Image (cartoon, rainbow, N blue to C red; front, side, top):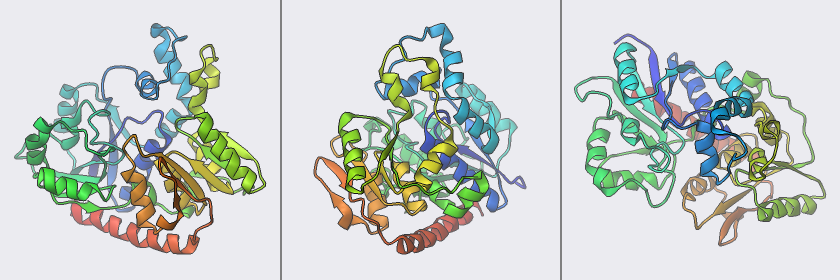
Length: 370
């Protein structure tokens, strides 16, 4: 097969800044290697992506009638949708298994890649069989690859009765890599599959590449940038304490907080541009966040950070992998919530470690695609 096209399965790209950026970065890495990446536009189900996402965070837009939900979705996601349209190559919408299989037959590809952000988490992915490439006939020679795939939670939430099927499907992969170190033994012990740990796709690009490719403004600030996926008084208080300790102010960036109050105007719920989020981290004095990708971009941009992780909800392994990979265990504090110290780490040492892991991760991709 002579085509250089690569098809990618990942989360739907609508509301999640980190999810959008990992999809963007993986495409950029593949383009640098001479391939033509296409991310498949696959919804997890037929409900509005906006409503699914809001429900997952226990937020409700109950003041918006159902028949207006599509308009609401377009309004709220206008900036993130613009970023995806401008920077990420998507397939036509594939709204069913039938459409996915038709697209597979009609659009030949050199390889299919699944990854990265929690693509093997059953609770998030009702079409989970497709994310193990069940739709690809067993005898077809298209290359099946997992790049930085993530189960998302500990313990893995895949039903035991699916183990045999997924073990068989994984045996057809030419290469498997995972984002969390803990996933390596899980794949071997439960599914009989050998896997390699690699960097999250966002770390395949450098600080300078993000600035140049996206035209980010470098305007250093003395503020603490608090990026919260789930905003709570406790987290806001912690961010304020970090700012006060550094004799500065705190800027809260929690786009979803408006949705918790009924009666808010639709315009108040509009998500800020992706570039504004990146610039917030890039220019901050310090970052406080409960987001994996908030930590990832803090490391990419060389910023001190405080990572808030609820140990009782599972999913800590993705944060643990980052902390251990870059030798930041000494900065961990807390029991119920894993909180890292806002002390400035050795930025140069982190950059060197990331450069080495970036090279290893790119080697994984190159070898898998040969």
